Length: 177
Ligand code: HEC
Image (spheres, rainbow, N blue to C red):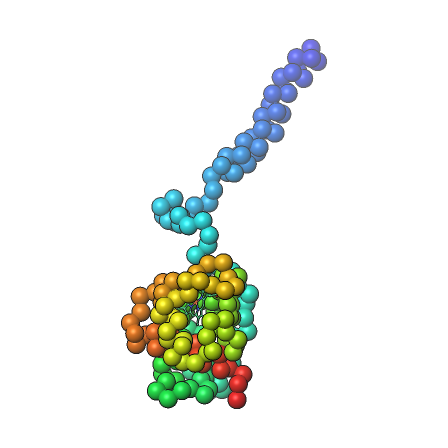
């Protein structure tokens, strides 16, 4: 008599144990998909935006209107023909393409060098050199494994390249007097 009760109870108990396990297994097989399902999953192996260390934000001038695009940098020692307005527009464009490799504020990353100092790998840092190298890209990198495509892979007009170069120039002059 006892035996039968025990053997009747056992399957019930085993079921209670098996249910959560089955649920856990089922959820493990269903990865959380982004809205849009598998079609929204990138085919890239590497993340589109490499990780970079979080740089200090560029200095903010008291009273300057700082919009959502981040603090504007105040350009110093601009060469003739390069204006603060170009630097501002260049900052915007830089954020669209160049930060992916060079990091926010040009602070550098594991795939591209910092642009916010006066140490250069390929150039001496003059404005015309910046225009040239941004246009051409860097087919043969000196320190980093991957190349830089022409215009960073972006679709910029010559005027926009001039603005981006103005921003990079201004970045490199930060901290200088
Ligand atoms: C795909 C990654 C990538 C993108 C996007 C990219 N760069 Fe580069 N950039 C590099 C690499 C790699 C180098 C060369 C590093 C080396 O020589 O080891 C480089 C070099 C440079 C240099 C020369 C630096 C030096 O020290 O001489 C400048 C200036 C520069 N990039 C500006 C830009 C600007 C401006 C943009 C956006 C229009 C941009 N890059 C977009 C990867 C990138």
